[in-house]
Image (tube, rainbow, N blue to C red; front, side, top):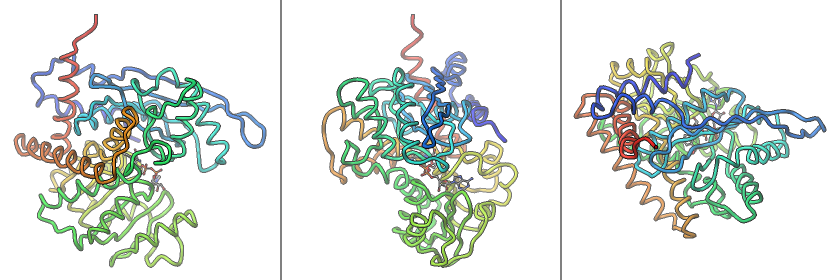
Amino acid sequence: MINPYEMAKEQVDIVRPYLRDISDDTFEALKTTKLEYIVNFPVRMDDGSTKVFRGYRVRHNDARGPSKGGLRFHPSVDLDEVKALAMWMSWKAAVVNIPYGGAKGGIQCDPKAMSQGEIERMTRRYTNEIAPVIGPEKDIPAPDMNTNPQTMVWIMDTYSMLKGYSVPGVVTGKPVEMGGSLGRMEATGRGVCLIGLQAAAFLNMPVEGASVVVQGCGNVGSISAKQFAAHGAKIIAICDSMCGVYNRNGLDIDMVMDCKNRDGCLTSSKIEGDVITNKELLELECDILIPAALENQITEENVNNIRCKLLLEGANGPTTPEADRVLFDKGIMVAPDILANAGGVTVSYFEWVQNLQELLWSEDEVQTRLGNILHRSFQQILDLKVTHGVNMRTAAYILGVGRVAKAMQLRGVWP
Ligand code: NAD
């Protein structure tokens, strides 16, 4: 298994030759995290027993502003995974040029085996433990795998109880009724699609009728699929952690998601399609492939079997550097995670701005601003790609890493 933190550092090294005005010391500092906070804390379980959980909050860099990043509940969460995810957040915020650094958090747990009450008590106790290192001016969590708007409200409420007053700006991705921004729920998937439309235009590939394969049908996967379907694309396959469904003529994505939400799986007889494995799904011939589940999905082992024209990274870190090189040689365009899924952090930023200023923007305002930011970032990355003759990921890293490095050099070293 590839260590995601090693992979994240390797990705930074790849752009070293293109950032000659950055000193070696600054470059090395970029590959280290600013703060690694590990907490072990007890939670009362429904059966009366007490279980100790391990949680993490990592701040990679805050040279450009308070740090920002999601919170993940998953059995495989560990320190190196959280460090890698925090580092990717720094580059992502810089790519879309919003005034944030990068952070990430996680709890090693299996939420599928826990009741809602247990998840709530775990979330609240974790918030209590990490309260010294989060806050609207310090570090602002948001949803990630297996966390959602309700999780964010529990964090906001617990943090506010500790402070003695309401602090909505401590998290983003809250429900609209609780200070969330209109459009935040859909923002990541909408952004994946907006970047996909621009990339498809660059490739002269019509989106209408294009075949799309999606790995994962959570927040990012399901919304990306619905957005592409709304643009006339055919969603030919989608999966969850257990299996996928495939129909060459296109799935009825609303029906698929209704079944998934109702039954918790994709095997309903109501879905017109064949059940396939997750391995088969990734290797299907298609125009657009969207990994929207976990990291390390396209690796040396399966990259030669990847048969898409455009790879849109909805997930963070789904492609290893070795696989990236092969994809480039095969002429497959990759819209990298730090661009393709940046719609989420961008609208999170809008939510935070609205919370701090006690403003409420209309959905139109949110969508227009999001569209403008993603359009500009895509164009800047495309220009760098053409100027340096590199792939889209390297171009995005030149932009993102370069901006963070510049901020660090301008601030200098204190004292
Ligand atoms: P989610 O929990 O809503 O959905 C995750 C999906 O992945 C589920 O459908 C799950 O069944 C599937 N999955 C899990 N393990 C799998 C496996 N081994 N094989 C295939 N599918 C598997 O999570 P999400 O918020 O949609 O996040 C998905 C990815 O997108 C993560 O990499 C996350 O870091 C990234 N991301 C999320 C956001 C956001 O706003 N939610 C923003 C940026 C990036």
